[in-house]
Length: 144
Image 1 (cartoon, one colour):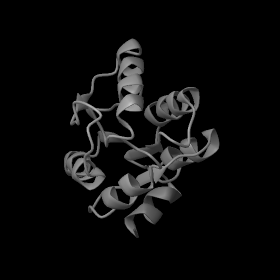
Image 2: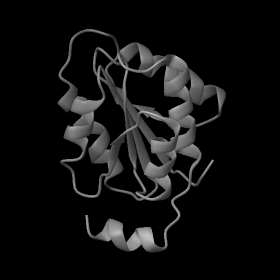
Image 3: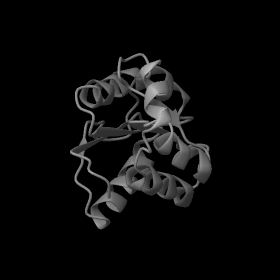
Image 4: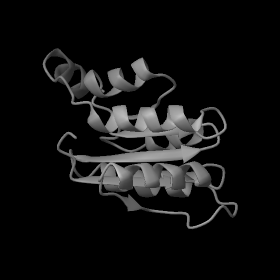
């Protein structure tokens, strides 16, 4: 695992079940995390939960987030409204790895209705275990 101080995870109602599966995976891999809700699959508004995670992640370079909604799109759009947040919607292994290597992404967004459980868990593992390369990419990120 790379040097992560905190992992924050949240979802909306559509992503709740996948969030709970991801939490079990994180427990198994001995990752420490904070669940910012919701506590069940009752209908909620995804922006409320995306903002909670983004607020936490933007305050520290070593904080990362995991956001899950039905498509991953709404959470992604909302999180990226925050300064110093680089949220990415990952859809395959390569995009997930490159999001960390080249873009130093600090929030992964997942679509519970678009991904298999196995894919989602793989993307989370890659996201959490891939270190930013820095170098030429650091200069580019400063331009965002």
